[in-house]
Length: 466
Image (cartoon, rainbow, N blue to C red; front, top):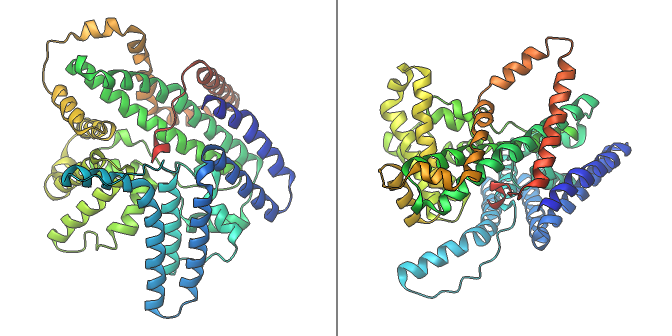
């Protein structure tokens, strides 16, 4: 994985940039990006590239049929068939094993579980394809008649395997009419480096703390488990937000403007606010394609509660074929229902800092639900987090000094989780030397990131497995 990362940074990306900007024609640039994206996917997942191409072909044909059909029933039939094909493939590869295991467990049967490896990025590119098909059905956009253009939309390598989830209508015009520029390229490169630094410098070091403690949680005190939970809270944020920022930056380098995926979620004053700031493209996807079609909040209270539960249970299940993800989704459904039906007005009157602390308490608990897949282990860890034990916190820290020394990285993690650096950045640019200072900082971040990437065990991005 380390070798692949270095090849991407120092070979794949530079060669692609030189080739891309050496080709003057828009159509040839699109062909080049398509080829590069397919190579990128085949590099990491050669077995399933045909599956992705089949998905593209199916959605291409169904999109055209939905648009061509003049009858409502005909359009709806092709939409249903397209949804079945997309969710069928996702369900087979991602959830078949889960259902087989649970059938065998609860029914005492021995149904064979083929155990197919999960295709990288299938959850992301399936949702992108679904948004395209549904928007064509809703007449928000026209069906794409050029197969290459639809292939480019779904396979575009920056966001192919871990988002953000880009909707067709958001980049439809840019497929053939985007405007590359030196400023866009430089801004994109800066975003890529900042995202890389977030992953390598902060997320990877937080991962060492979280993984070490959770693997040996039975010998960890309440305080140590809370340190692990907070470490994972920062790990998953800087891991996923870092990747999203890298993807947005790479897109900008080639003239695409992908939507924002994170907006400082750890300064949220409520759970509702948190989900307006965290994984924005996924939460808005479920809002627009699941929650609102179910009538959203414009219905009776009973149906509103049903809609919240369904939406969030599906959101949790989207993340993985394990019971803890379903529990995680239902946990947020419960919190949001309590907030919307009972405590919303109270929260609005509390001091901002207090609401942030309260929200983060529940978010940290949520990340424990998300992180621990074994239900028995999950129960034990949550119990230990809220009860005292005879295990010495000081002794644990002394015995794991090399791991706990990485607690230093909590400082940049806390700072980078707030808009402080953004504010400082804005003030620096007021001065003449602002550009030089920014350039120096970006170069330092890149050098440190590469050095740490080489020197440490590489941690793959968390959302690659979804």
